[in-house]
Structure formats: C-alpha cells, structure tokens
Length: 211
Length: 153
Image (tube, rainbow over all chains, first blue to last red; front, top):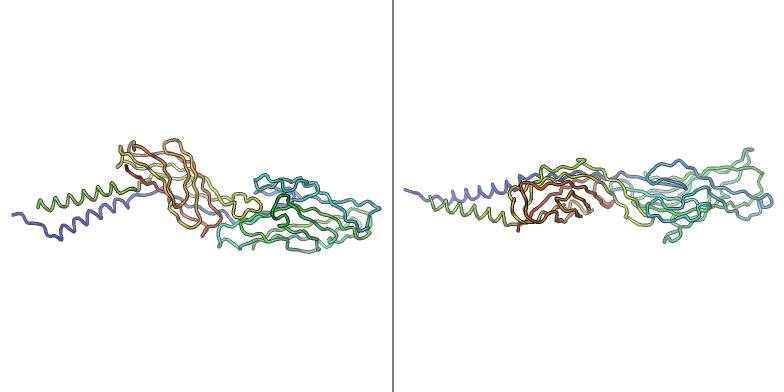
C-alpha cells in the first residue's frame, strides 16, 4: 500500500530545495575586488622656479640697484627677479606670471582625502629677518621691501595678498583642503633712507604648514 | 508516493526555471585577480582657483575570468557592476584586449561589457583600469567589490 506523504514532509523537501538554490547562488566568489588606499595628506609650496610634485632647491633672487643720486629720496624702486617661472605648475598651462623677470610666482596647495585625515586648511606664512645687511654690517630694515600681487585673468588675483615684510613671521593666507592658490608677487624697495653704499642681502622664507 | 514526487519535481523545476529567468544573474569570477592586489591613490593636480577639481587616481590591471559554464550557448548581456560603498563616487575607466568591451563605470551603476551568445565555459580578458575619485572619502581606505552579472535573453 502506498501511503501519501505527510504534508510536513513535502514542505521540508521543498524548503530543502530552496535552501540548496540559495546556497548555490551565495557560494559564488567575486574576485574583481581590491583595497584602495587614499593618497597621503600633503602640502605643496613653490616660490619662484619650482617642480610640480617634486623638490626643487632653487632660491630665486630679487634685487634692485639704486642709482647714487636717487638713494633715499623716497621714490620706490621696482625690483627685478631671476625667476623664469611664468606657467603654472598645475598642469593647465596657465600663464600666471607673464613677466617673470619682475615677478615671483607663489603657489600653495593642501590635500587631504577625508575629514579625519587632517585639519580643514593649511597656513601660508613668510618669515623675514629684521634687516638686510652688507659686508660692513650696515643694515636696511626689511620693512623697506613690499610686494604687490597679480594673476591676469584670475577671479582672485589677490588670493595671496599684497604686503610689506615686517622682520618676523606673518601669515599670508589660509589654504583650504584640496585647493591650490597661486599668484605673482612683484617686489619694490621703498628707498626711504640714505644708507651706506654696498650690497645688502637678506633671505625670506615662505612656509606652508598644516599641523 | 508518485503524487508527492511529481509535486516536488514540479516545485523544484519551477524554482530552477524561475532562477534562470530572474535576471540579473550574478556570475562567478573567483578566478579573476588584480595586479597589484591593492592600489595606492595618487593626487591629481588642482588647477588654481578650482575647488575639489583635482581628486585622486590609480591604475591597475585586472585579469578577468568569468565562469559562464552554466550559460554557454545562451544569448545575453554581461555587465560589470560596482556597488556604491560610500557617498564619494569612484569612477573606473578601462580598455580591454577585445573579448570584453571597454567602458566607464561609476559606483552605484553597471556597464555592459559583453553582449551576444556566451561562447563557452569562461569569458576571459585583461583590463587596464584607471580609477578616479574625489578627495571626499569617509576613510583613508576602501574596499571596492566589482562583480559581473548576466541578463539572459
């Protein structure tokens, strides 16, 4: 005699079939997968001649020779630069500093990959010594040197503002994360005092920092 | 006894048929692998004044081997899929050796890589892939789980 199966048996078998199919679907491995690490946090600064994404030891020279009959007459003297950097290093070919012989391009960027990767901005500053000095020890206050800024065609040509050196450290700009700021600085000597003849030297240092 | 066997057979047949017809079907590509196995993103340039224009990018090779044994001879379309893992999207752009189609895929979407009759037990190709993303991740690393799925005609 054939007995009809109990309904519960059918249900169990049908359920087993479903479980089997689900397992077959889930057993598939998927190997086109990988871990991607974000780029590291980074600050990038170039002053004058620079190299994109690389180190460049160039220290550009800005100078002026004041004719003896004009020394100390208060007429500001434009300074020249030995920088040749006119095209932006950011790869867009932009001619940021069309006359580099009288300009120094300054560009700064700060990169972070996520909010936990560092502060929201970096700080651009410049440090100048109190004075320029000559071989005899005579001095000219660094505050005699100022700069104007430009960036032809830019909506923010003064993104790094004009100013005057103060013989210390002064903050120039805040660089938001994942932004690049850049413009050209043109220097001038105020020529407000009669000073001894000689060649006066001094070095300013631009710094981009993010704690 | 016969009656319940028939019922069971019909139930299982129906389940199998439903599985066959319920597109898409996730494909087994467990023999695929990437070179390198993990990648390090590099920064892209940020043009002056443009916020967030320069994200990150990386390149890699993927040796793709998709198991199509169960579908050999059937017509269909194979898609590459990248599920969205976080709000910051990932873009993959790739070239191929010709078996699969080159293309572009953004996380959360799928892109056609093969259409036509599945020729045999496997679909194989080598992809050269460029990954790009914005600089707005939620963490310093993330796992990308690409996979392939099939729509059978």
